[in-house]
Length: 97
Image (cartoon, rainbow, N blue to C red):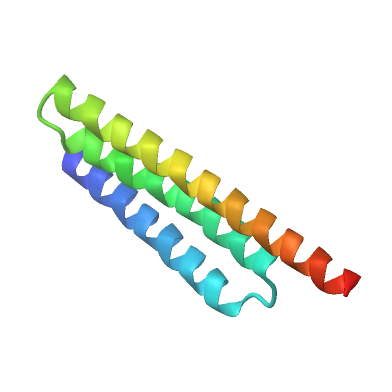
């Protein structure tokens, strides 16, 4: 039963990653693209991490999976913020010229 739940969680996480990628390719402007990518990837990462944690053999493995998910979520949010900030500054400079 645990393996089936893990497969469902990992499959759902993969679908959210796919949805984020489609949003990145289909949405018209950078801010919409970043929103789709960071939200969908955050949920996808969480679901895949939960699925992998259910399959883990020990508490140490679960702790490592949790750390990997935390660092990936932190770096994804930070990169999204920096990209949006850079784009905003670039657009404001273009209006001043």
